[in-house]
Length: 280
Ligand SMILES: [Zn+2]
Image 1 (tube, protein in one colour):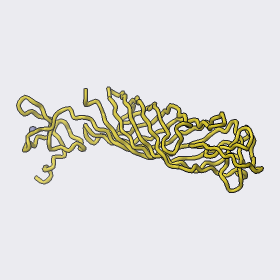
Image 2: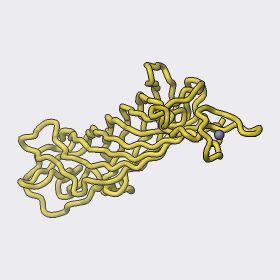
Image 3: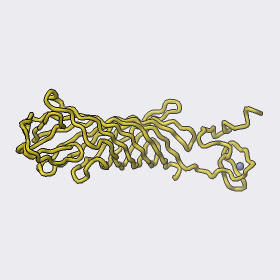
Image 4: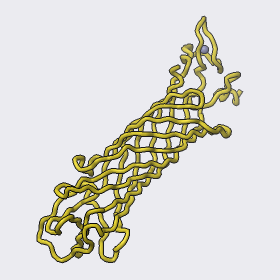
């Protein structure tokens, strides 16, 4: 049973598509400054309203460009680079498992979707941070083409925006990540894979003092590359001089070959890639 467990690791690259809805907010745009938001009166305005909202109480000028309810939404992108560990169990074409990851996320500039002649782009003061994720996974292998196995899988999990996001203001959603894992077996223990995926998630930023929050969608398109490893069924042969290329016995115990590296696929009938065979 143990050899149906696969341990994996991956990295990759992703692009996040962020957008918000500024429902009850108005926009205050002083020349040469970042846009600020307000709800009732522009005497109290909110800064850094993407990841760590603050308050600006300085005397307002006459720079209201959108009244509450009339503000456009903002859109922006982020670059994501994950580092993840996974485990899953395989039974026939089905697989079930989970994972844990830390992801570097670098926020880019946010653009107003309208009124861009009056409203500046928005930049956060601290753009780089980490995203922590853990998830459960189910998958189904639906196609094999030569050495490549295609598996559709769904991850459902919890994420947290850390470091450059204010944790007391951010309420993240559950995330859903749908992808296709394309695997190639290097040996019966080791596989490499690539996984294009799309992730659905969102968060709300509670703006302190405003009594309101800003909903953000935070979806991501990504490609991961990694490997999985499973524990070999048999112990590696313990006799140093042994050159047997297939599973074999010494006494009443069975061993696997000791001349085969774990990253090379072997024919179980006669073995392959014997290091000496070409020369002699
Ligand atoms: Zn042996």
